[in-house]
Length: 418
Image (tube, rainbow, N blue to C red; front, side, top):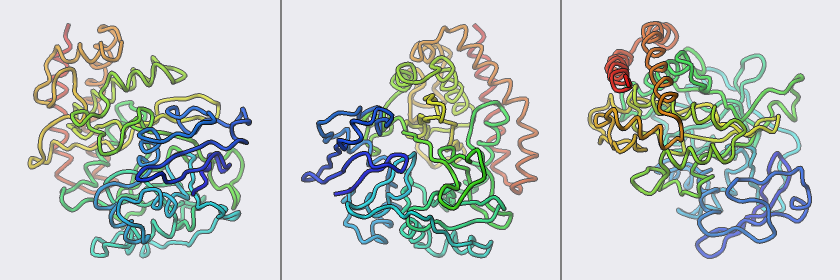
């Protein structure tokens, strides 16, 4: 049995039931009207949640694929024993969730180890296959996704600290996959371009000039209004990705495998967020930007809701923006359809009108947003290339993505004339 914490307060219990898991809210949490539910998919109630709804929420907190198998080996958990893996690494999760074995309390004092630039280089040494997974185990850290990654804490003097035993983190660092040349520069360029084009995105960069890994600041870990202290160096904000909200398992995140499409994602925003029209417009711009840079991997786990301190619920800043189209050996296909199109090359003018209908936006408003986005991207392409060359080092992938973006913005403008 495992205790589930929300905002560092116990909220319920997670138990194994056969091959599945079951979550039950504590009586105290049910009686506390100020304590929110852990997910929109699991409103507070006395009856336990099991089946797909519980599995979808909790499994979407875990790593996936080969990296998940490596973490299982490092933690000594059996392959597929997801509740045991959650108990082993769930001390610091996405959002404000923490998971601890029953009877084991989270540490009252957070512990860290200082890291030098040399330590960072060793942590991300591509020849050391277990370094990141070992750091994940020591930190009791669970981060979703396929790519090898860990999270660290950067203090107010800009020094890096390795978290231990569930200590709070501030940044996520990802190991570039060797199979995709210049993936690091690719993501840095796309995220920088999105920011300059007016999308709300997570802050990104390198952890240090000599450490060539992708680094992004966590939008679910914010600085406190006062000076940070040892117990609360950052404040946790809760978040949940759209697969969690829509009860979709991580193995089914792509639309052609049963995952959410744009209409379902728009429905989440229109039903739950504080400013639905604004957030749905941001969703439209996200779709347009992914089309422009060729991000075919824009699935529902790359969209999240963020619970803000003022009690607003909003679409989270965008993350994981990468041009997959610059890798010719990858199979072509959109994670979510654009209208009826399953590939970016197949998108027609009528598909953009279908997208507007899916999002329940007037075509005139959607058209204006898409045309504005295309113009903004064109306007900042050259300066983004220059900035990335200066800040992250030169890479041929900048030129490739910029050329694709120029072609796609021209086509988008042509497809949205009327």
